[in-house]
Amino acid sequence: MAMPTKVKEDLLSVGDRPRFGDANRILAAGFGSTTLMWLFSYLAILIPGAVVGEFLFALAVLSLVGGGWAASRDDQGLSTTLSPLARGLLVGFVSAILNLLVVVSLLRSEMAGGIGWILGILIGCFVAGGIGGLIGSATKPWRTDGNWLTVFCWVAAGLTFFMIVTGGVVTGFEAGLAVPDWPNSYGHNMLLYPLSEMVADPESGVFFEHAHRLTGMFVGLTAIALCITLWISDMRLWVGLLGVLVLALVIVQGVLGGLRVTGVLTLSQDASDLSPSTMLAIVHGVLAQVLLAVMAMVAAVTSTRWRRGGLSIGSGRLATDRQLAVVLLVFLLIQLILGAAYRHLGTDLGTRAPAATHALLGHIVMAVLVAVVGVFVGLRGASMEGRDRVFVWLGRTLLVSIGVQILLGIGAVAAVLMRPEAGTTADVPAWEVLLTSGHQANGALLLVVSLLMVVWYQRVPSEA
Image (cartoon, rainbow, N blue to C red; front, side, top):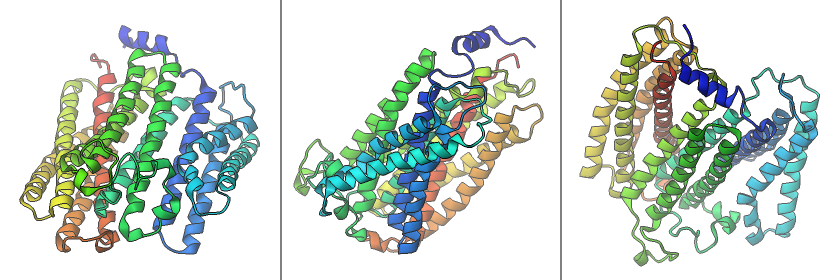
């Protein structure tokens, strides 16, 4: 069957690979390795014990070495103008700039020689990236299509997922108002809030809240870089506009997160001047997961598989599959709103408050509908003959995610309802936060898979 004219024009206008491959490669490796560094450092602070903590910090350093290695390896069939060492050093430079979000606070630290510590950490980023570059220069080229723009998109989505997890931990420990002001943190510029104060009292919840804020700033820088990269690397106007949409969502998300704490635009820390908003907390939580799904969609439409087209799902099935995927997406959005409402109403009003109870009941009812429709959509994607591999993969992922979500949901509800109302973060057991945050995070992944199903079905030619 001949390829539709519209698909041919799309392919001819964009080619098989995005432009500026070296820049995309360095950005993907730099932002990706820094994301892993933040993840391991976050876990190192959460998990007590010198041995485990130092092991996790070592993994953080190795992440940057790995980033330099990944960027320095050549792609088969893809030309490059930079040496492997130069690419590794540039990855270290990107990471150093991003890590300033954390280390610049050492200027107000009680540690002697704050500037020296900052320079040492930044130089360490260069060295680690350079070591990775040297290692990569001695290894065989990648067997890839060289589409680093898509890799960068997935890195941005991964970082956003990490931000969602840290936000879930904040809500789980009921630490959403641990830092009373915004955009400052206890009167400090957010970037200059001392690390020593951030980790001084784990039971205060300040670490969870401030780490989430810093991660949000990291996502903001990533969205700016991604928006610019999409405009200069991809020839399609609508893809560039998707980058603008991502950046706009990140900005709105940041403002909503701040106003959730203060209720009004003010720098005051006085409780009488503040009016924390539960409704904004709900919208903030929902929008974060929508942002993640949109980022995943951008990764899909920049992929080589999307550019080449020619997807097939078998005859006579497209209209039904498209409709079912849209129904599942709508159900998941409703389910997401009800779940966010229950978590935040339960935190602010109490888990047994009437409003929270109503949200929970609605959430459970929608869970049944999501499970029924989701299993049906997943089975159609995973088990029918004539499907393209992308639909088989999405269908199987959907089925597994639904099963995991049901188990996590039952555990989370039982854990929350079985304990007394919390007074401080110390009153909330870690295993409960693991269940509730895991349920939230897996729900975000379900939304991602559902939107990807909708988007990929749109890529299938109508005559297929």
